[in-house]
Image (cartoon, rainbow, N blue to C red; front, side, top):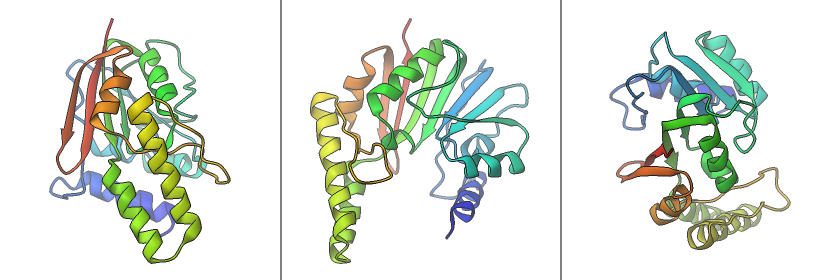
Length: 215
């Protein structure tokens, strides 16, 4: 499946209320400005059926995905940017979401930026990668004898451990990826202490974290 087809499939999942792969945020009452970090083609914002009176903005570093999003919808403002360096003024958004994109960022830096652009009391919704997912990918790479892929998964495991234990993460060498890690409830609770409260974590079918920006 090519990249555009993958985005369109994700959009179909986001629109199917009974699809077990679907995980969507609930837009808080009174929210007027929502930001999706790592938005792809805007699948989550479209699937969440954000009210027409809400200003919806999505950022991603993939220019092709943003171009696809602009063809799909005119209700989302698409901006090419990194989650670690958001091109918005402080306290610009009431609600920030990120579905399985934060694991590919420098997590501490991205959380700092998220706090900056949220209004005090603004809400955060994240879907993250558990360790089990990376272990599954590592075993698949080993079974297929893909040495480079296996080494990459080992680096991601190491990053997840250092993030969990020390709140630190390291750039992946010799790859196109800038950063990647898995997350843990304990590690996320620690990371969110700096500027967030009311942290809640769900570890059902999906690893979902919500929090509120403290004053």
